[in-house]
Length: 262
Image 1 (spheres, rainbow, N blue to C red):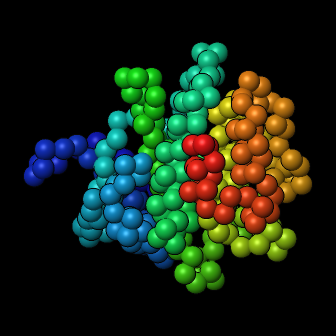
Image 2: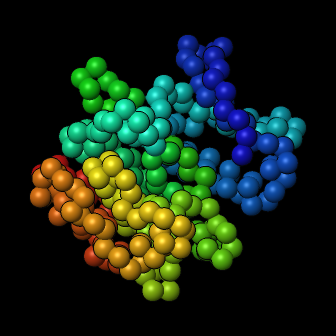
C-alpha cells in the first residue's frame, strides 16, 4: 500500500516507523475505510507489549502517513526461512514461547471485540533476546474488523470477490462460511494453530495450489505425525486448535494459551 521509513522523532527521544499510503490508494473509498478502521482499533487497544503501537495519523493534502512504533526485528516468516536455509529450526520451547506472546496479543484484541483475520508469520515481528528466546509483536490490522460492525460493509474475505487473506492460514469458515459458520475469535485461534504447527513441523499443514490448500483446510486433518519430538500433550492441544468447526476449537485465544502454559 506504500512504503515504510525509519525516522527520528524530533520532539521525543525515540525512533519511529512511518508507514506511507500511496495517494492513488487514498482515493479508494474501501482503502480509506480500512485505514480509518485500523486507526480506531489501535486506539481502542492502547499499549500492549506484544502489539506494534500506532502513535499518530498525519494527513497532508493527499498524503497520509501512519506513525508507528519502531521494533527492531524481522518477521517470523523471514526468521523461519533463514533457519531452514541454515538447516536449523526453532526449539519446542522457543516455538511455544512465540505462540504464547501471539495469543496474549489476540486475547487483548478479542476482549475489545476485534478479530484480526490475517494472522500469519509475516504479520508477526520477532527479535532474539540475550537468553535465546524471542520477543514477538503482532502488526497489521488492515483487514481486522469489530464483531459489532456491519458484516455487509466489512466482510472482505468472500473468495469470489478476491478478498484479502493468506490461504495457508485461513480457517475453514473464512473459506466456506455457509458450512462452518461466521468469522469469530476462534478464526484467529485456528490461524495461530497453523503457525504453531509450522514452527514445529517446519512447514504449514497444507501445501500446494490454492485449491489444494483450501481443500486441506476444509476436508483433511493435519498430519500430526510430522510433529516428531513434540510432547504428546502439545500435539493434542494443537489438534484442538486446528479443528475444522469453530465450536470444537478453543473458543478464545486465552483458553489456547492456558492449555499451553499447563
